Length: 250
Ligand code: 6PG
Image 1: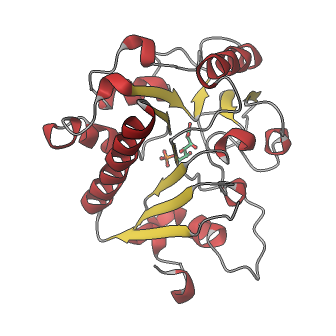
Image 2 (image 1 turned 90 degrees about the vertical axis):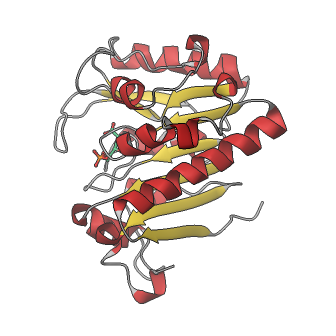
């Protein structure tokens, strides 16, 4: 199946970036619910997506999605309790305040040991998808070391070709320096739609390296994100896009 092109959108400011991301999320959800009566989405963590989740919870957006048909998963999780300040689950639930039935929340049990949590998450994925998970939408961020989800440079998890979720040690920056659980590339690259949401000048070098021209092969984990049969979009603010060459600009 032909790989589709990478869409790159650069927003004038963060408000427009969040609106663009929210519109894309709504479109993906409406299409999935109309076609398959459900919408499976893997949320990204960190700090960038918080504004997007809060925007989706506003009346302007929340009324456009049938939240009872939405199933929330996470692309990765820090191995901390769900009420911990570093928990991606906590950040998401605090900002995405929408009426999703509790049975549709498929969190990663960060309070468990990484490998045990990964196996539990994989069982949850299997009972929902029955076969290799094909998410309607996976949201991703980009670390300033080029990681995405919790797939860090030089990690053995980058080479995982059969398991859907794995536990990873994480002892060097970027923080928090806690073990993680992450989806693997076989799942990420099986998605119908993948959206990177990246802001800030601190990410500009990695954005340029990741979206760089073919002449400079990229080794960063984010460079291995290419849906086999789906759409890939990068939503950037001007600061994150500032080092993109003319040829890479949308
Ligand atoms: C995590 C994330 C991670 C994040 C990037 C960017 O658990 O930390 O899933 O992949 O998306 O590190 O994080 P910021 O949005 O905080 O810059």
